[in-house]
Length: 154
Image 1 (tube, rainbow, N blue to C red):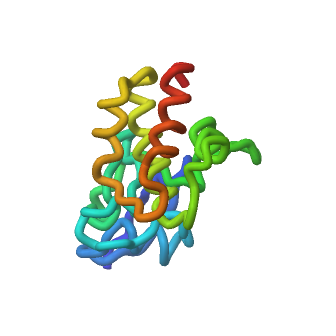
Image 2: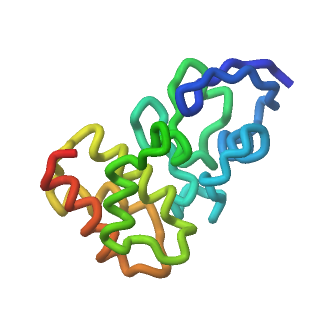
């Protein structure tokens, strides 16, 4: 076990972790951030997508110690003082949420895209969420939600 400092959702945490501990396990088990879902455990479904220094990553493929010195953002860290992030609002307004299992990962992938490119084309939106599987929505409303923000440059 090793003691590390890790910044998650704008807060520094001192944690004891195993050298082989995955970020998803630390987020869920130690920090109780349950928006980070484990779907496949192999980086194929995107349910565990978080932002690490603004880049979308699969938390099931990242070791916790790799997060030292980086800023990690989960869905819980998007809203500020009870106000939803515009991407969360867009998902609600567009009906892009059904069962909700993929929603946190989709939102974080979209947020990562919009941080880098506030006005992406549809092809760029599709590419950004390509690693996130949804079995309920058929992606139409998800693409619409992200596209609505792209048009506004949010």
